[in-house]
Image 1: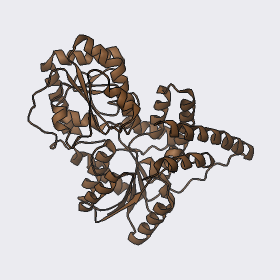
Image 2: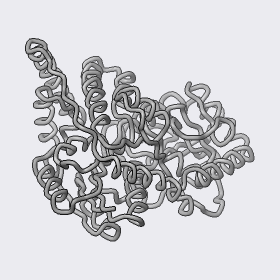
Image 3: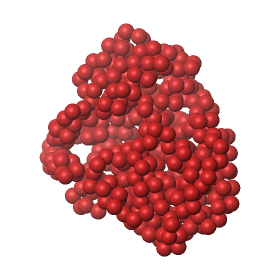
Image 4: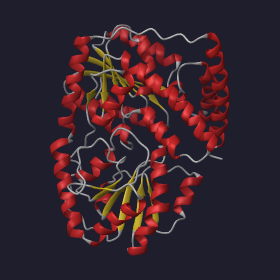
Length: 439
């Protein structure tokens, strides 16, 4: 088959979970099919990384997005968002240049299907004609926004997040109904997408891991060393580390004074990052070219996520490295792991701290938990195994074609005007908050 894959950012370099999933599935798909890549690039790092994809895809094109004057482009999106049916997350990725190029490539190459890698690109279903679309949902985006609103303590920001979440949920449901096939990363996400959209044929293609890459000789473990991996460019990771450092780490250090957290991942110079760096027992390692040595020497791998969707590739990496893991339920949501068998799960700060202390004081039990975790990763989550599920979805989508578009319900004029006015006010508030966020 000939496939056009459209991504929100370059699948390379592999510094984020999004990139890891996109890159590995594109690589596996290219072993069997001709895959063309059309990608936005949002940073210089993206622009350099896209060149690597030319070794995998015979056609690779990049379109710049919000590079250079990103804050003002986001402000303009926020101001026009209330007057459209599209939420802010979607507007960010809709550009006239990309729409034209998608239409041109589809007409020129007559693809068997178009793979839209994330909900944010669903607007491009309008320009692919009758070409079947596979919509790959890395998360249930409305769920992430709902969880963020639930944990936010700023009243005005929480109100804006709830407004955006409701709008995003409606858009996500429509997008799922329009695609030929929809791919979720877990049974949990699939059930939620089914509930939202009414579809019963949501396919599950889990996240995976390169188990060979993470198969290292057993490293010497540093007593008391904890590690978290995740980029601070994603809000759920920021929230997780702040939550852990403020409410869990002090409880651990009260019983194990040498306990020390290393945070690995991209960390922009923001006020939140500087606050964390000043805390005792916290080391910000930043972005590492190779995370394996740092993770391998940790006694316990922590995943204190309170917000999120999909499944966390960070856990699959740690399982492959035979690490003892303590996670929240949200952190390991959607993965076929079992508390006490290949991972420990705790949702309250005191319980989370107790699990960590238990593993720090019993290194043999931690090593055995890690050994069983690697067995789980190899048997269920190696990318070569995972990709076969996506290839089956591609074949089904190509045969089924694209479902007919559904007519949108018409709102009564007065209600529409009222909704637009309320939305405009919320949009202005949101735009102001965005500008103040990094001040």
